[in-house]
Image 1 (tube, rainbow, N blue to C red):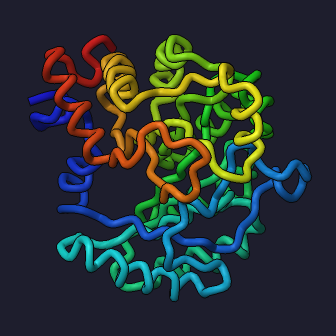
Image 2 (cartoon, helix red, strand yellow):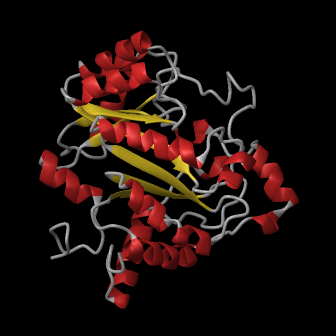
Length: 310
């Protein structure tokens, strides 16, 4: 038994759901029609890697009501996971606090009214959490299950500026502090492979993630999408990017996990999108479940686990 209470060598989200919710709780992505400050206020056209459509399930349409999207999502996932134990409405597309509180309230409360929905996951940016929004999120967290998924992406200000992220590392720390004050659980989202960064740098940054202590974390390898600014950058300067092979990524993730606090729950190790969206496909059709098996095999071979060196 490892520190989180079972025999797996990392603190898995599936275990967390089983312990706290009685079983699998399916996330139902929602496109509520929000935009992003990079696309609107700053007129920069978004982050250089952004291709939001790549992560949107086929049933999603921002032209449809939130309730209709969720009902469509329930039908979509019931065929795959008939024994799930309820749903989270996952406000995933773009920046889901980039609107007045009255609009957020309308969308979020409608989602909570859908039968089977146990709570909300709200994906947003560190620089889109004004006090009025935080007050509403705090209210929500006292009456439903709520997680704020925060796009950290990198702990390097130079990288954040280069990819036109529009916020700083200091802003990330401030957002975590303000969410923590209100006892709102946070899922940190990080990307490995952004231009100019190296595996040694990411390993060094584990200490920063441990310092922030999110409840959950999602790791994604960088994916380069068709039609993005980053696609052109990669074509011009591929040597600026550290590209992982699947096996190389497995070894890196294990190095990272050994240093990661055992209290942090792992939601995902990698991202998957339909191949038609990818400008570069180094992993071909290597699925997430196969990656997880390889990670667990490598941890077993090393006789290591999450937090062994923490």
